[in-house]
Image (tube, rainbow, N blue to C red; front, side):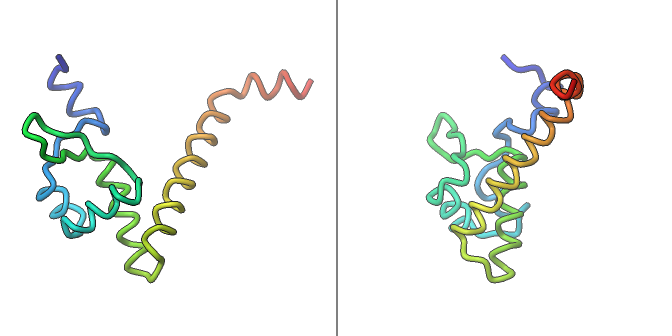
Length: 106
């Protein structure tokens, strides 16, 4: 079982109900359902079957909501956010392996 400190630090822990997630992102509950349907993310489910969102889900939802508010189609905004995250992950991996890059250059 996760310890309280682990849960507080884990951005992927499903801590928020749909209502709270909608409130925190400024989006409607329907918008969050549409993000799930667009496969931006899949929220966890409580024992009772209710959707549970993580801080990471909220960050993604807020980014997509901002783009949609600027006129970008929902599906396009979801794809952009996914690609941005993939790019960030790749950049972080590259930064964490400088010794490998130097060895390959030699």
